[in-house]
Image (cartoon, helix red, strand yellow):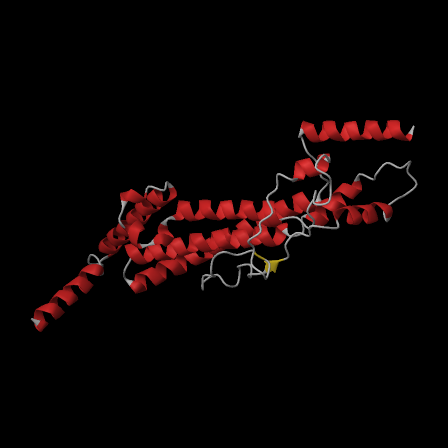
Length: 270
């Protein structure tokens, strides 16, 4: 019985190595089979068709679409609840239009004591050099926004006729959004980790031969790293545009209300 058991184990190990790969044709055929299976499972993962293969039941890291969607939602919630420096509307009366607009933002009451974490996934060992480190950001300050805006206005006055300098909007925007950088780069790091973990885990399944798998990952590494770094560069470009550029909007409600404010204040001054 013991001999039969060892024989069965050897046969299973031999079977896991796949087809013969002595000739170039056999090697090509083996690699094509690996690629085909990788593409098939990846297609199911991207479309969230997890019923197409039992592999998704045993390997949660392969549920790529779900993991990305969940991380997208967490990122959106973090930006809405904690992406600003100061909270608006905390000291205004219920009839105040500013309080009315900003009260729609939900400020979380269940954040950890050490602040808001920008990462939700553990670093992958292959990517530690490019991933954004885990940091914890302070929660938004509930008081002080009016004092801060008043000080900013008074410290930036020139020889104008009392109208606020349009550049003040850019200054306040940059101050209010300074946590966007950490939240965005933490998000990109998590998405990169999810994608890379998916690739490595799936390769281990479709290519059990460790030596061949290591060779494939070695060939893929340079191109993958380039794409990951490009994701960071694009995120940093968007952050620079949104935080350092001149604020602009095509939202007609903003422009209409701003024009109305100017007219009312000009009438009051006159």
